[in-house]
Every structure is written in structure tokens, then in C-alpha cells.
Length: 199
Image (cartoon, rainbow, N blue to C red; front, side, top):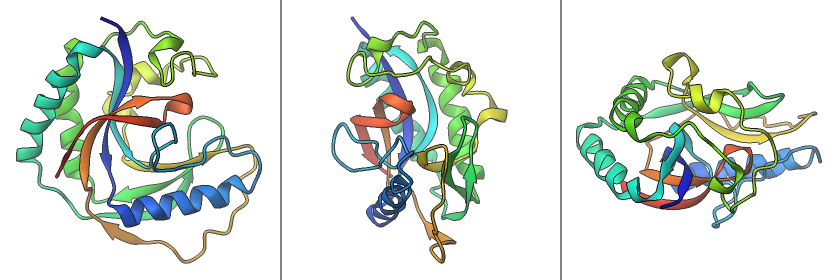
């Protein structure tokens, strides 16, 4: 059975996804943005990562069952997109969220449960599509489950010069719509939904 790089995520409701896509496309106007969000398979889908890693494909169903169990106990919070940030790999620009204690608790519960299934050997052919990874796998890919490396956010894009006037769209409140397992692609973005459930 082959290995696959996955991202376990919370998906925003459609209106928040549409906003993130619009802002990402504005960011793309800088001509240095290497991510343009979209909704179709193969595009980078707006999401909030809970954890990521590499697993045998045969475990996707089992992980989905674990997530279904946790969602029954999840008190779906009203989150607020609060501000923009530049992240840890050059200029990742995204939107932060507040009021995310429940999201952090869900994140920690998931990583404890699936940690035995995570494989630390990652090669380019585990990404979507196979061989699509265009950069070395960063150290934080393996350290992502650590609490100090986790903060809920929606990534908008990446570039060397991010000069976009986002004025007036934040703050905005929403509840996550779905939990999903996605196939990771270039720049560690969700490119294909493998499994999902409404919250």
C-alpha cells in the first residue's frame, strides 16, 4: 500500500472560503504569490490545518472514524478572523483566528490518537499530484503536532512582496462547516478532499 501526505483540516463555510479566495487572488496581483486559492480539485483550498503528516493510504478510513468520534464531542465555536500576518516561511500572508480553545483541544486530541499511524519518511511522490513537491520538506512538517507550532489560521498566499490593500474586511465571524482529510500538494496546501463530514 502506498503512502500519502495528508492534512487534517477544518473547512470554512462557503462565504468565508469565497472571501479567502478573493483575497488570495488580490495577493496574486503582486506577481510573486505562489499560491492562488480555489475550490476545484488540484487548486489550493481554503482551510484551517489541525495536523498533517504522512500515512499509509489504507489508514484514511480509520482516521476518518477517529475524526467522526471527536466531532461528536466538539463544541463548534464561533471563530473570528482578526488580522493578517506574515508567517514562518518568508512571507506567508494569512488571517488569524481568535476564540480557538476548542480548536486547539480538537487538534491535541487528534494528534494523540493518530500519532502511531504517522510516518516520518517523506518523499515527493506522497504529495498531490505525485512528484509535485517543488521544495524540500521543511523540519516543521514533522514538528507540526507540537502545541507550540499550532495556531489556527487560514493561509492566503506566499510571496516576496505582499503589497495588497485588504482594507475593511476584518474582523468577521464564522463557524467551521466541515472536518476533512485532504491530500497535500505543493506549499503544503489542500489539493484534494479524501474524506469529509459536516460539523
